Length: 126
Image 1 (tube, helix red, strand yellow):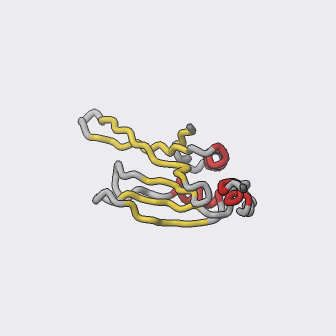
Image 2: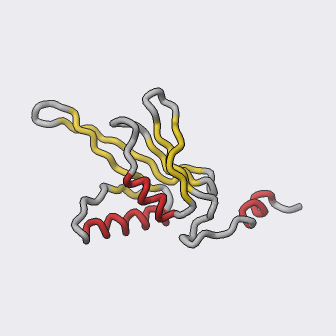
Image 3: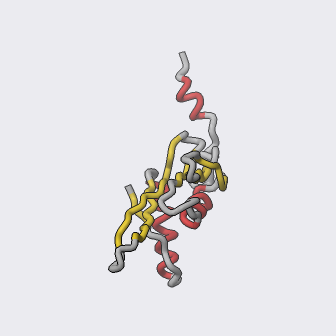
């Protein structure tokens, strides 16, 4: 008896980035709590760059990078709140990557931004 898992995964062609070509999609949380599908691509590099450039729908809003090939969240946004000297809340965004290859792409992109004196994104790696 053939394994359905092995058969399903063996038929997918590998993408040039080393990730399955089933694609990535960014989902943003609306204030109502529902998620809206956004940018979609088959390239891991383009997906990471788009995720880092994308803004949540509101401060503190959730955002995910979904892998259709792996059927899981590959990256998400985490928020921290600090206060100014005037006791005003300030939101700080950190991008968490749960996939090693996507984390490496994000780190290289962050390093390239630093080298070219652009403002890099704060990226956390898990």
